[in-house]
Image (cartoon, rainbow, N blue to C red; front, side, top):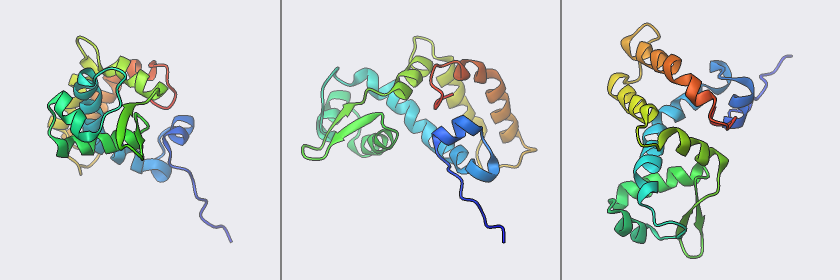
Length: 160
């Protein structure tokens, strides 16, 4: 008989095939959950990270004046996304040389980041779960339609 074919739900697979709610809907959920952490990492933490230094959580907390608890959550998310590297022996974090991180920095970390502001505004308007015929869904779709051209042309297939 016909079995269920396991499909990959990675960022690269979604970039290659597009978002298919039957195959990779969890990417949308992860994106919604992770975006505040990504925004915090790129817009708030990276500008205050001492250039070229590998730091422990405590050192980074002191250097950036960030609370160690939430900072640890942001660093875990950034590590999973390959935005930071962690030396297992010294427990020091360093900013990774990642094309995806470079693309996101170009999009989100600028003197007047309209994309970051729009994404933050979206979190104020759309609170899941919501149905497709709702104000939350409309806010998401409006943001997508408005911001997609700049996001799509960022130079990174995985980010776009």
